[in-house]
Image (cartoon, rainbow, N blue to C red; front, top):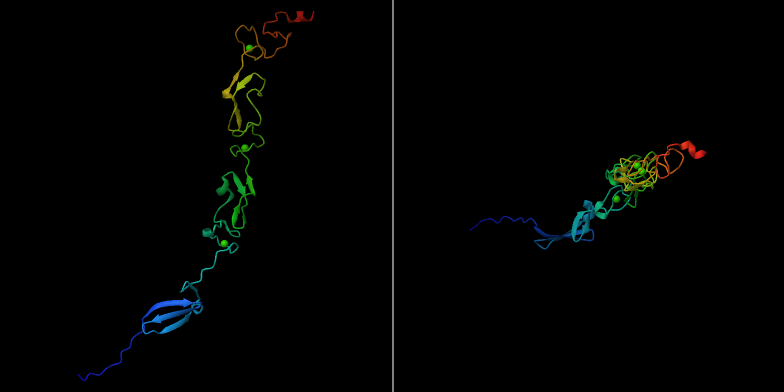
Length: 200
Ligand SMILES: [Ca+2]
Ligand SMILES: [Ca+2]
Ligand SMILES: [Ca+2]
């Protein structure tokens, strides 16, 4: 048994790596504690471990940090436009206020379908510009006026019966659309056979 003892080299087996402040403390199998500086590796000590430093999100760094509720940052709107946020009728410039998208600087393009009464349009959607069936030429119409492609749709309007509505009805001998006498059709819609006698 004359074996020769060779030195045994034991690599330290470190089972615990903890940093404290900026230093890592390595607790190794032989009780060796080695200290390492987190900052030397460009890291920081976080909850006992050396980790990569992650900058805190903040408004103004040009990066949209959605996890902290940012919708934009500087001039980065994440691809959003007035049209994508408000609808295809909208154009203009988005603003970024406190990393929230401000759409108030929009421009609404003119046209039928934009929800707003533009010049040249009789009506738009439910906006009839104050018109009703009764306000259409003459006051003989009743019913519900509608808007279709920015023009009045009178299909829901109906003509009230009576003398003076311009339509021959019932016992009317004539209806010239007015209630004047002496014009060939009397105020009761009877023919005035000799209109000139009226002026004798
Ligand atoms: Ca940011
Ligand atoms: Ca319009
Ligand atoms: Ca009539």
